[in-house]
Length: 296
Image (cartoon, rainbow, N blue to C red; front, side, top):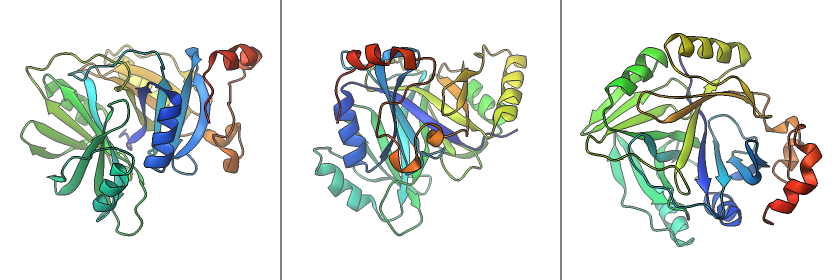
């Protein structure tokens, strides 16, 4: 089996309103689901993506208004990269400055132009001009960068277990590629003297990879268990089903099913318009709504 690429990336935000404003207005993504963290129903879980919330396009956030600031380091995703059309980085730099975001200088990485910036919580993001020329909108994920003290074990995992291929090496960065059209790049940064990161506001919580369905996910789980990984049982996330484990370098990975998708409890035209709760939390709606900050 080979993973086809990233399903979604989940990070931690502070203010849910600031998060909503930035990802909808500055980055032009659609809020495709407004729900809560199923494991912590007193906090929002917000999903942004393309019009349908297609796998490979969705950035999600747990919102912790009173949460402490995280610390970047090894054993943690160091950057999340979105794909934009070739030739559009000038447009994006100007647009970001209009939202008081200072983008980095454009650099070249494996033959592609890359521009870095941070969201309001300090989360490290990148735009990679790898799409076809034309419009300027974000197309979905290009990939993620993981910081590791040593990349050997994680590199072997990505190639031998996930079926990725080594696609380039430059300095302390090695690229691994999956065959999918979106979210196929996983870069490993080797930082031998790096300290462990602290997951909190402004950091990525986990990276989810795609399984096309329940049967494929079950095969992944059996394979990972056979390899000695501690893998969770299948968890119902309403819009997909998930299993979680830590890769050899310590980053939390998820394998999520492509379906059933975000239209399971809302019409496609109404995605993100109302607070949606799974059936097992619906009886607590009044309590949950009272605990959540108001957002627009």
